[in-house]
Length: 305
Image (cartoon, rainbow, N blue to C red):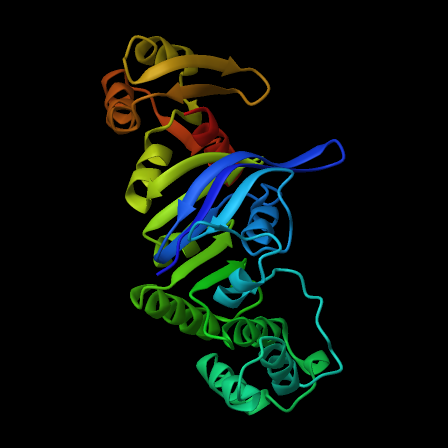
């Protein structure tokens, strides 16, 4: 059982800060690294895998620094998001080469086991340049598993996979987590993380925004202020009736949209009060739509929470 510890880590490229003072521990089981595109997830995974040095701070595996530590590389398997591969090799040759780099006693047998684990035996003797994106993802996964690492780091691993491939990979990662391996995967898709990871780390704009079990993070997202665009048969009367209710924090009349923009601070109460108030004042609700449901808005709220 292995634990990766990240302590006050930052990484910048010139004047661009990609990761900003992140501290977290990733232990056995499956952890989801959640955040919008460009949040710094790939940079963080590269530092955890020993492929990139922190500008400041430390990344350790079971107490030993990862950067320039060859022993740490034996315990880590990494599946990068980028597609750069040796396309002139077959899938089997690619995985065997990685087994040889790790100095395994029987590279061919290790490669065969890894390819079978990701169900790529049928295409192992085809050149990689003939593979679909999903097949390329799976052969990268085989390469990362060939030395049976205790830590597995995956950067957007489900990109390009069809539903069957996604289900198989999810089941594989669940099994590895249950075996006591440390598995971390990144995603910008909330549903992927919900299906697979009980524990979540949220990264937004390079900062560590939230940490905890999925239910806690989901509750933070649900309990945040919600903004609604509401059109009715009498916007002024509806605004006057709602403004005094404790479920709302502000109501604006949008002349361009000919609608109300309402900030609800008590989501459950607001969803009960809006139809009740409308009925009581004989107001017809024409449109009720959330105006801040993008992932970026949710993540931005988590940063400030």
